[in-house]
Image (cartoon, rainbow, N blue to C red; front, side):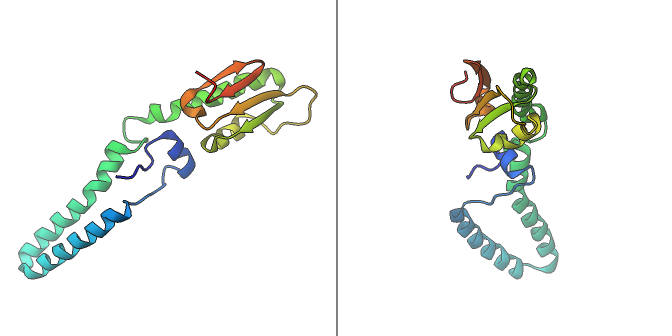
Length: 158
């Protein structure tokens, strides 16, 4: 089964309403089962047809329900875990930028981090000695640390 919105990074890039479907190979198999189910419904009597139709609709909804309740990063009961990494990155950026009055240069290679960086650091005006921030693709999962006067988030961070 294909991964879909199972990490903070996927949620930040695609949004909480992001969707993705099953792999193409499983769709072909589902079409076959749908044809068999449709034929069975046609052959059943009226009363039995209603019951089977309800059962078929409920069975079709189970995979989606499973993804929402058990697989997605923003599933019920995990709200704190979803916001912990973005909140930590935001706090680290704001703490580092404070002594520079927000005047920092950013080298950002982390697509999911872009909105966090945009909100944490105001647009920098030209200044004599800006701070330097390096944000690598794995910044959300690895955290940040100060290295040689610059803030490094991601690969080089522990």
